[in-house]
Length: 179
Image (tube, rainbow, N blue to C red):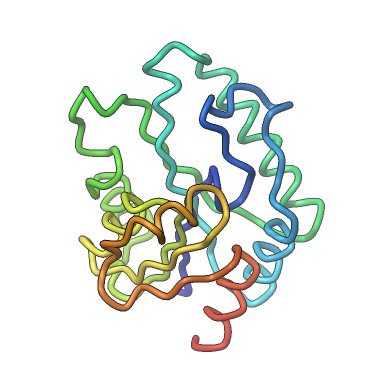
């Protein structure tokens, strides 16, 4: 089974330092939906793993998060793609949970749900914590410059041999070329 893990904010859709708090604020990055559709056509199973501390902070309710994800699923579907599952951490950093990236709890859940180890599984993110979580389970971290990606790249400290791409479409092009 070909599996790929994507962060949400800053990878699939534009990010905001004020959080994405409503379906209206969820806006796809140009080319991201088509990149997911391309993965789907090539037989990849696309999974999203996203920190959503806005829940713990009281910035939005669970129903709103579900509505945001429904909009994302619909937008991806309209271009011929499919997201198999969305895993999210509802906690704030102060809660010190096991599921919030850079910890690997969400990724362990993905491994269990899909019945496979994550060794070598591409994992696309825009923040250091996305990349660290991927590396900690043997997945292959890929950094995109969208979202917080430029700042992440400038700050350094990326896991060894992390390739860097302009956006999700370029990362997907690479993944498909080396698969």
